[in-house]
Image 1 (cartoon, rainbow, N blue to C red):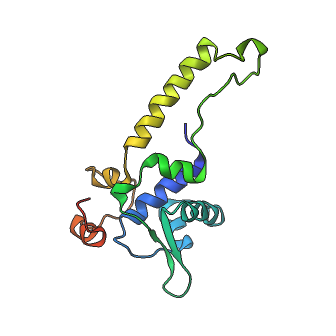
Image 2 (cartoon, rainbow, N blue to C red; image 1 turned 60 degrees about the horizontal axis):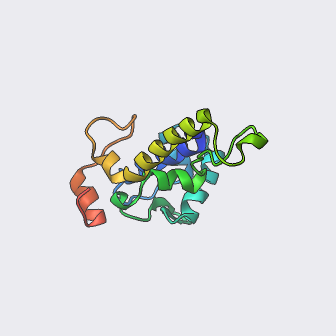
Length: 153
């Protein structure tokens, strides 16, 4: 349902959300989230352009979350790197379907609409807050996150 690009972006954002403001280089991120470094660099540019992450060059540079994780939706991250696609018209381009979707594609688009709403309602903060392991990402204390972002995460 989501692309590999969006998967890498989400993994990177969740990892950065766990770092309490500590900058991570592309190489560090790639190693931690199991992504190709050169491809991840492109993904991070998209997240930076969208204002979700900040980047700083230099010796102690790298990427950090630019916003509170509670204010970043999963859909926002996905759309920053590879827009979530609905089915606006018949993918087959049949002339008979110009006025609307056929029953099959209407149902598929309904499923996509539910998924889109669900991703829009889920925040990165909620993902970080949920009990359980986040893949194999190291976890920091919630008090450190709260101190960094000035809010309950």
